[in-house]
Length: 70
Image (tube, rainbow, N blue to C red; front, side, top):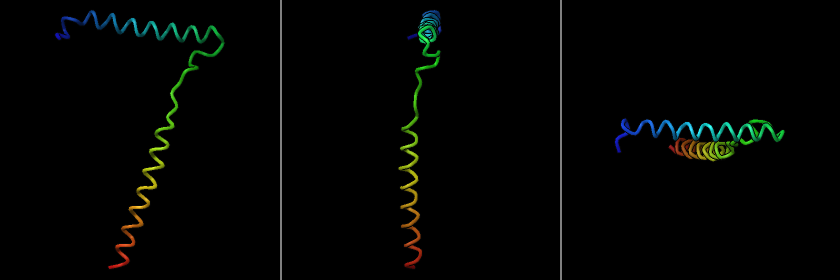
């Protein structure tokens, strides 16, 4: 696909997505829920950090035990 030749189509598609987003914000604001009621919670990152921390602690303990055995 030739992107340069189709750039006007991509501009139009981008504009449509932006307009839909703005309309959704306006509808939420008009309902009294606030403009930014919908959000993303990053709980997955917290879980990953916890798992990574536990893994690193286990590796550190293993390495310390190896050093003590030498």
